Image (cartoon, rainbow, N blue to C red; front, top):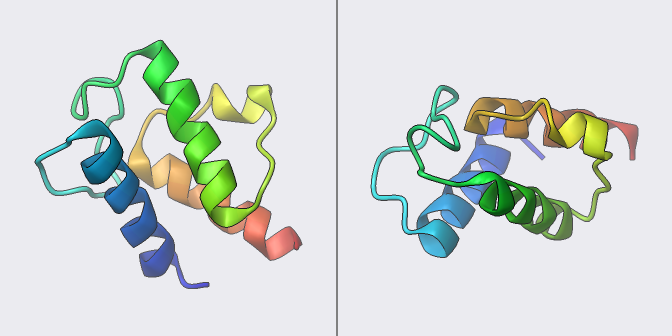
Length: 81
């Protein structure tokens, strides 16, 4: 899967599940821009895990604060499959 395809899915999750109205880019901050709280961020990672059939450790999830970081994490997980 290409990076832009992964980002499109992440964008879709943010827009459809969390009602984010802006453009999603690598720099889109999950808390500051998309207004996710800490519980939303955990749920977002769970949705990403389910969508891509990957497993993300809590220590990895804690490092994700932007859509770009989420995308990079997914890409790394998919490469290991």
